[in-house]
Structure formats: C-alpha cells, structure tokens
Length: 308
Image 1 (cartoon, helix red, strand yellow):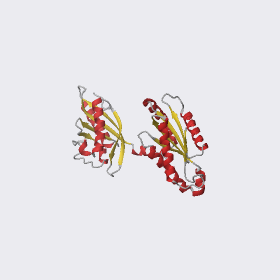
Image 2 (tube, helix red, strand yellow):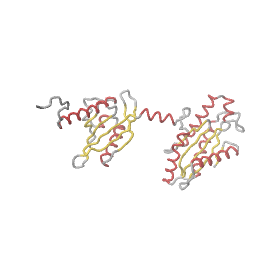
Image 3 (cartoon, helix red, strand yellow):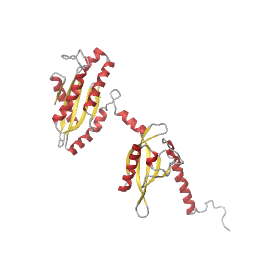
Image 4 (cartoon, one colour):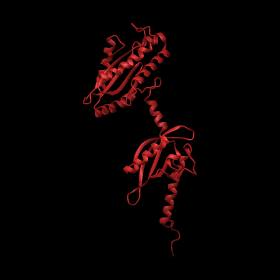
C-alpha cells in the first residue's frame, strides 16, 4: 500500500511554475516605486507599470499605445526619445538623468537606464526604461556644495571639481586659471556698517563674478568669509587677467561706501591669479599657494588691483 503519510507536495508542472513567475512579475510591476516601461521603435508606449500614475497627465486608459510626443511636453519628450533611440541604435544600455512633471506640477529628476529588447534573431524591436526618482538626492547634494548666502558653490565643491577641470583643460590644450578674491578691509566694513550690510557686499561680489564668468565651464565659489575663488579655462594669461579685471571693475563701479578703505572710500577687491599649463604637473595645493601669493602681491600693491 502507498504511504499516505508522505508530507511532500506533488511535483509542480512547468505551467504552474510559469503562472507563479507571471504573478511575481506583475506584483513587482504593480508595487515597485519606480517607473518601468517599454516603447516600440516609433516611440509608442507598449507597457507601463502602475507607478506612472504619479506623473502629470497620466491617464491609464490612454497611456499605453500613445506616442511619447503625445504624452509629454515637447522638450521633455525629446530628451526621453533621444535616449531611447541611442539605446536602440547602439544596442547598449544608456544611463541618463531625465526630467518629468508630477501630478502636483513639480519637476522631478529621474536616473533612467534604457536598454534594447532583442528578438530571436538579435534584432532590436523595442526599448525598456527603468527610472528612479533622485530629486531629493540631487537637492541634498546641491545643498551640501552650495553657499547659502551667495548661491555660489563652496570650497568642498572646488576640491571636487579641481582635478576634473585640470584634466579637461589638459585634454583641450587650454590654460586653467585659479583666481582668488578678497574684499579689501572687510572686517573694518563689518565693524562700521554691521554684518547685514556686509552680507549685501558679499552678494554684490558674487553677482560681479557671475556677470564676468558666465561661459559654460566657468566655476565660481565662496570659500569662506570674504574669500572667493574662480576656476576657468582660457586661451592665455592675458585673457584670464582681463576676466579678473572685469570683476574688480564691476565692484568698484558700484561705489559701495566703505570709509574704512582709503584712499577711495568704497568697497574694492584684491585678486590673485595662478595658471596651470596643459603639461603642468602641479598639485592643487601648489596651485592654490601660487594664487594666494599673487593675492598677497595685490594687497601689497595697495589693494583694488589684479596680480599674477
């Protein structure tokens, strides 16, 4: 007689296993707090998980089957479709930041991985996108490297970017410039006019820096107190000095009263330049020391000047 006490379940059929896998797959799609979708090669949505209902204008009845350019504002649709096309044409995974609007009309940034889907013959027939909301992470990163008063980046960000910019300048065969800036006799200004007015002076200096250095790749920093720095590439030292002179002249032209800063009696700046040639092997500390020495020379010359 068969042993009816055997507790082991009967073997599962292949169909049972497929059904279980399908249930797990749909559970993941329905509950994962990420955006998962597929598009055909014409940009039509062929699948989207439930989390898409967080997006502005999402309509579950009409989302799947619609084209990306029908669903999103054109500038957003273009960036989404560009990354899909890259993944399809180059047959590789593409990782890019993409932006979309949520239902509350706020703009969110997603880190998206897009990859091609291949048929049995190895031909691309669609792309799949998996997107994670990184808006809060980016905001925290921005706050950690941004000076609250002036909106400029801080010393920490200077340290992060210096090596990257040095490599970029070397690759482009351009001169990398580190510019250090001090407000002349700033302690005396705060003593005479108060710290709230001193804050306004610092904001004015930041504004002058942004006006002079507004090209792609120009970087401006407040590195502490009344100390500022700029990092930028140029064709030669004279071009760099001219940009520094624009900052000095801009602040001088504002004619902010400073009776403790003779002989002119207005807020002024001292500026020091250091240069990194494409073939230079100097460390960041060595370059900073050179700029600091140039700044000292500017102060020794009587302030309100640019030195190198």
